[in-house]
Length: 102
Image 1 (cartoon, rainbow, N blue to C red):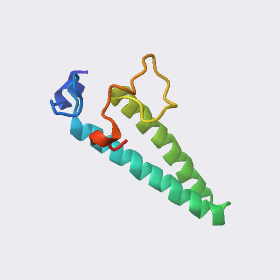
Image 2: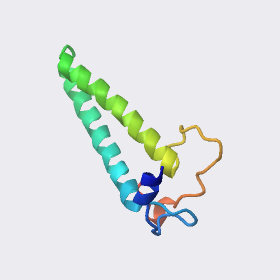
Image 3: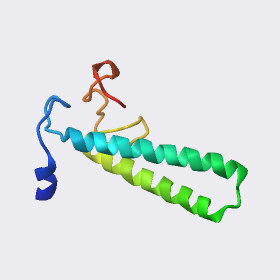
Image 4: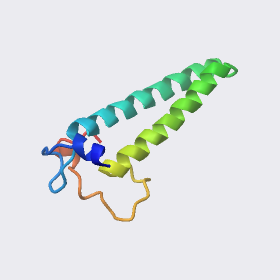
């Protein structure tokens, strides 16, 4: 846990909590890249439905995306309305016109 705290630095991303903006952006970029790979593999599988390697890559990317989203949401809050939480956090983050990517 202390290693995670060492990676954090203060920035203007959120009002009250100190957040590592670099880590937040890195996770968002990884999520986008993974979503792109899944979409690309899906298009390939439309024309090559029996390609076992592509099916395996698709499954692995879907699992990796779930892990990335879970990690992001536990650290920085929900990415979508479907994220289960104990507290309604939508009003805590910046609104789209306040510079947020998600």
